[in-house]
Length: 87
Image (cartoon, rainbow, N blue to C red; front, side):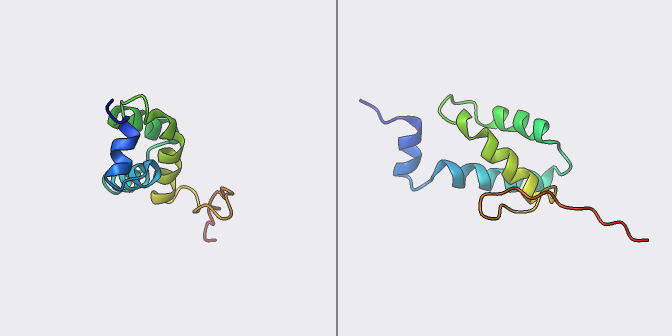
């Protein structure tokens, strides 16, 4: 029996979270300003394997964090950035 897609990654030392977070940061570097929905669409194009689809939300948040649209997770809470306009 062949290992599952996730097992193949794990055998190579790659976790799903580390994989999608690294990819999300890379995407944010070259393509900033996407919405969460657009980031999700990008994820589905990049990760078409059914076993990967459960990680879409992690990719979206990692993208938004890397793009500066939300603050990094603190104690598993997502804290939106407050835009301060100079007077």
